[in-house]
Image 1 (cartoon, rainbow, N blue to C red):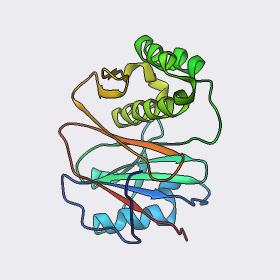
Image 2 (image 1 turned 90 degrees about the vertical axis):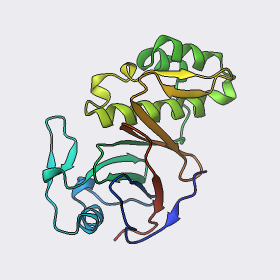
Image 3 (image 1 turned 135 degrees about the vertical axis):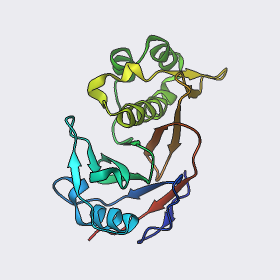
Amino acid sequence: MTPFEPATHPPPLGRDDIHVWFFPQWSVGGRSAESAIVRELLCTYAGSDVAIEYDARGKAHVHGDLLHFNISHSGDALALAISRSQPLGVDLEHHRRPRRVIELSRRFFAPHEADAMERLPEAERQIAFLRLWTRKEALVKAEGTGIAGGLHRAVFDFDDRGEIAAPRDRSWQIVPFEPAVGFYGAVAWRGGPRPVSYLVRRTVR
């Protein structure tokens, strides 16, 4: 698992830094981007009050691009990625039920990706599918299109062992993370490598 540091307040966020927050007990209703805790974090990072707006596809952003952030829910948990200067995409999935891996891969993935899923032993397919799905969804969210734009456009190569390697479009950075048992996630951005810090907040007001 990825080591997430417990935190209640944001540590310093440099211009090139990315912070990924994990909330394992998220129970706040309504739009998460407008929740008290997310607004508190964004305002603290920004050093001032922030206004949350939505683009035509419904993706939340801070007015004036004082910060960039993205949110993903899975079950009762939430992931939040934040940067000062870099548009981001984040995805979080929980392995709580078996998925029809081959059927979904043929529907949403590129042919060679679906072939890779089918070659795996049955016992490995569920986790491999989530690891690839989160990478692809994080990329299309960072791009601004989301799943509606088609996950097949986010194409990944595989190494000699059949493990997921880099995205075929090398202008993207994809960093996977596993914040807790059964949870798989990824954060994506376009550009060069950046430092990523992982923070967990276990209580939500």
